[in-house]
Image (cartoon, rainbow, N blue to C red; front, side, top):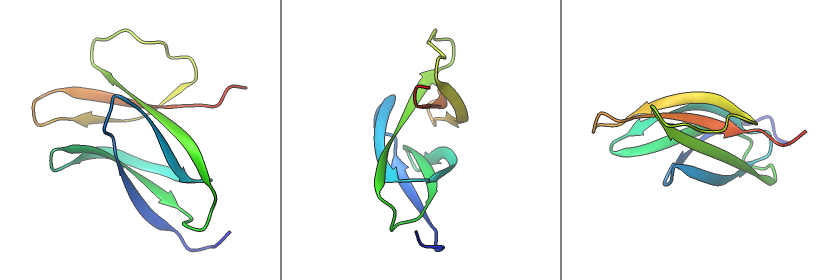
Length: 91
């Protein structure tokens, strides 16, 4: 693995999305860029890709919290708030 790191951005195009990111990527933040919800990772661009799953939940909705870790929230221009969670691997 290289010591060099790069910040990569991924668009969150669905409420629940699986992303292929370099292994060991650090999730930095989530937010809006223009009118698109996005997530930023600090990555080693030479690392093999691995799957990461993110789940967005609207305020007030019931959902199962098993294996989910909160990573941030996104406030849309339409006044909606989405809480973003990352799904942890089963133990």
